Image (spheres, helix red, strand yellow):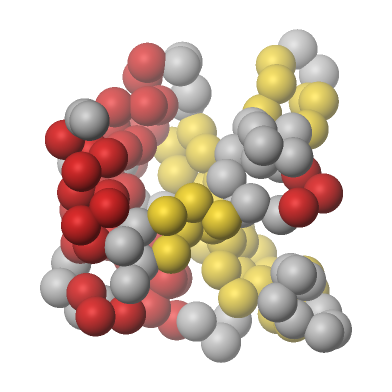
Length: 124
């Protein structure tokens, strides 16, 4: 078991996929390259507020973005979850806009805050 997987299991970090996105996440064809991603991550509440999500996301992006030639990446969070926005901003994401969105856990659309991170701005 890799160190990252061991830490993920220890602290209750797990990927969350939308059922309709399939095992590979949300795949969209964007011209000359393919974008793929997870729908979200979950950190066991017993470990909230200790910087684990920020550290894990920063390390993950520092490894994955160069390895796969990603110069930027987009993310978002529901407006009623400001802690997720704080994690994104600490890593270097910049807000790009707001929109309404939904999830399998919500009965109706809710505000989403969107962000973008350029690899040069990643705080690893």
